Length: 305
Image (cartoon, rainbow, N blue to C red; front, side, top):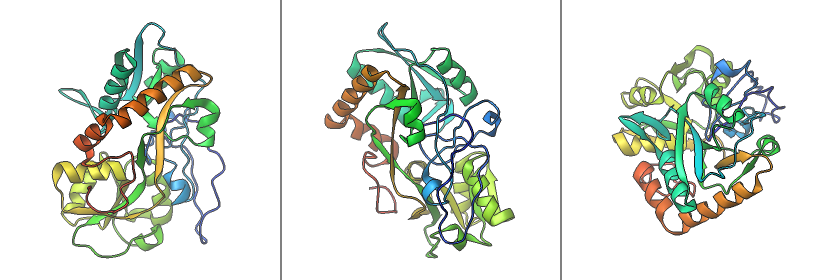
């Protein structure tokens, strides 16, 4: 799930009278994993189009002139973020939901898999140098991204959500409801930028989101904004006394991006994804990481099914 950096497109009209501004951001599959170091690198990676609806701005775009190679040599070269738990990360060995998905797709396609974990700036360079064939952390198929990439069939649903302590029954349905409240967000992201613009110093950025969730579990925060899949992962893995309470944007499906014009590769990946969805292997991978089948939105806004 991700993107590159360029000048942001015009945001949609904001709801009510609230106005949002967005400078540089980075987006992956989900909300707002923003790497501001890429602002001058021609990369636009906002980590989610979710705020496009909820916070009325944030777009997701992998803006890059990169040309991904066709694995005609029987090797599927995949680039992933090195530190993007639970999607791709290293704890002894490279692992994650996206890693397991790519392993399954490569097996179905009868290709040897090579995974290149790195930071976003280096992944962009590798894509431009034809050193990788596909982005393994899915992108949102926004109009901007479709002008730059061809996409395989989407297979995961995700959305920006509000997370609260399981004993907290207050309704936080928008940023207006969070005025004066301690809100945890992932640092250096589009969400931090948007939320701070509206709420100021009550927004507390964290270098890793699990730190924010642990403070929420200890009732040191009022709420955390994060993508639903990441919240589900930590609730399922750590059994924290927290819950997903309200969506801040509608569910969106993300997919794997290949070089623009590489219709054959997109079609082959789509066929492999369809096989993975129909043979039960994707459901198994989803259950292992999130506790439910993420090919469909978890609309209960509670602990994963």
